[in-house]
Image (cartoon, rainbow, N blue to C red):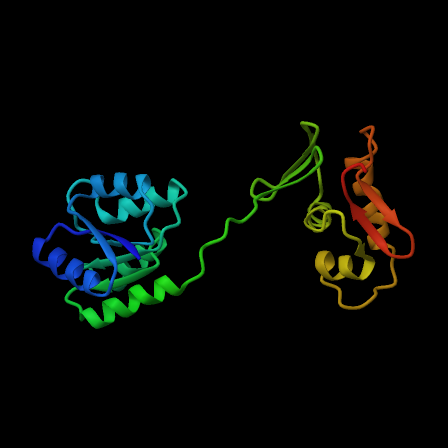
Length: 225
């Protein structure tokens, strides 16, 4: 692995970098948080090992800035600040693990290897799009062709399920389970009523329909074919 160690104590930096090198890792060392943040955003690393008490930007602020910049590189805090609240603060700032000094190198190496085994963090979609229809899952807004659409909570969830299954038939049973959490048939027209209301909002004001009824099967949302 390629590892960036941000540690201002020369003895600790030499000890850790030497041990990592002996294990076959490539370890870059910086003693300043500002330099570390610049390096971590400019270069690609498999892991960052960060001391909280470094000159320039402190380790906690460094990791927060890194996460705000969208960098998902795993971070192991290696620091003398070891109170429970401190550890919680480090993890909530975006750290993946937290080890306090003094430490045993065997434990440090085990934590490094554990982070290396984690699968890469996948980007999570926060905006769904089908043709000119958009659904912003964070802002809880919807629009089509740039025109905002006012959806009730269940209508929003219903549209989300349909958009996540773009081009596939979603059955009535699937909608009852995923939108209303019904694991039985309530013998009502709740699905049909909400589909009708949703269609009136996302399709009727526009020239091309996206929401389609598939006879005897369910519903499908897709771009014009």
